[in-house]
Image 1 (spheres, rainbow, N blue to C red):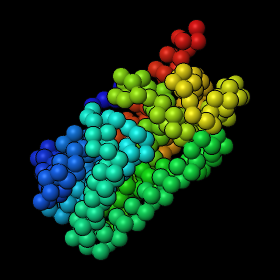
Image 2: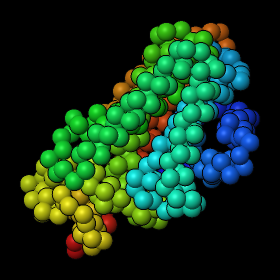
Image 3: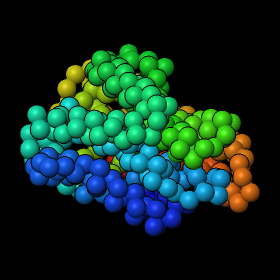
Amino acid sequence: MSKPDLFALPVHDRDLARLEACLKDSVLGDDQFLNEVAGHLIAAGGKRLRPSLTIMAPMLAGKEVDEAILLGGVSVELVHLASLYHDDVMDEATRRRGVESVNARWGNLIAIVAGDFLLARSAEIAASLGTEVAGLLAATLARLCQGQVSEVRAAFQIDRTEPDYLQAISDKTAALMGTACRIGALCSGLDPATTDGLTAFGEAFGMVFQIRDDVLDVIATEEELGKAPGQDLVEGIYTLPVQRALADRVVGPRLASLLGQPLTDEEKETARHLVASSPGVSSAAEVARDYANRAVKAALEIDDVATGGLAAIPEALAEMAMLAVSDLEESAARARSRSQALAG
């Protein structure tokens, strides 16, 4: 469904290769077993979107990506990876990034402790970059936990409010995107206005990213998604497209009669069909577009901070935000077509 380069940023391949090597080295120690567990998802690969946002920052000032920038990107990615280890335990997931999940392979206890280890390594690296970076990452981690707790508390609540949903994804996803940008700016010595602009872009883009993920979890096929769809519905996490569908006079009452409790596979597919056939999906996509517009505005307000800075960077950020939401709208149109074909 998604284009392979949908979230590609104009960073050099050599810098991405350096980042990858630094990321792998960051979890190596004397314990070979812990090395294997901590490096499991690193070896599985990934988009590396968050550290790419970090190592892109110095390009605004025409600077090279130095070791501090790489370490900043690694500290952010380790927090993200730790959250995946912990999420998979809570979700009882068996697959992640095309490989067996850590909890499925080594058990929940090892997965939790390994996730904690990644957080500890991230904190250690951040501390080496100065008190401002360390404090920022710690505050971001607190927001991630706050967002996750909010989401867990709202499980199976069909009356979950939209502001609660938006605040939760702001904390659990957008915060780390904004921090990835800000750490890059701080380590690059960018001026305060540019630093704030990059942070605002990251936060707004993080909202687009999470709303897109939440919509796709409901409407995409397993082939398109790369994993079983509808996991949020199974866990009782009712995201924006579901909330908007519940408010619809046509499908809302029937959808409400299904939700609020664990679903069978058949009930999950019925709920997915109801959401896909409702205005909820296109309505959620409109919200994502609003955040994309905010991301574009923040990106285009970023000025070069030194002669030799790359003016193409803000435009590339703006384009990435709009591509993400356009891809979502195309996916929503395909889902509506499938839903209409099933109904017919």
